[in-house]
Image (cartoon, rainbow, N blue to C red; front, top):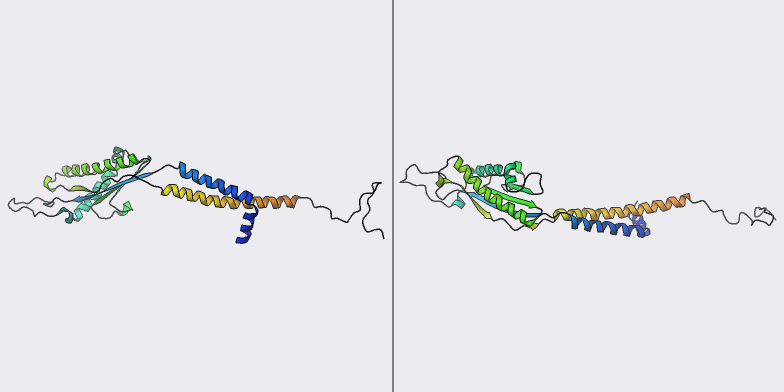
Length: 243
């Protein structure tokens, strides 16, 4: 069926098409209104070496040169970042901050990449939390940020590293204020709006099919002029026999 035939059916059955479209649009608005809200908060840390480097001089008379931590990055910091990210993503760690696996909170701790299996070699730790409320999302990010710094210090104490060589987790992006994530709700409304269009088409063609079916089942009317009116004695004669 071409475009004009479809348009003709839609306009012809407007009394079905318009109500069906309006009802579905109301449903789309209802889906957008009742869909659960999601709020997002995030923060970012970078691992830095102390100004005296990551080693202790063997001769105190010749100390290590003092360098700028923000320009002193090596592959070891990327490895430390990966180890820390793995530790923070354990079920025990996420449950500790209030985001247990399988709950309504989504917590992502990465090095900045979108694919956790292809973790890029960077000294960054990016924390993102999606939660039903703004306060919960922001609070969890704050807890994870503090936990990352605590875990980093505990790991260095565990390997008995000299305190003067401890790597620091510097907050480069403090926990942001939670913003509402409207993408999922908007997608639901758009999908429902598309369903409204197709439901209108379905209703219009269903009404057209039903009307045609009724016309096909209606008995044919006798053709005019084939029979004369019934006479007073109850007999009926064919028209045109006389003469």
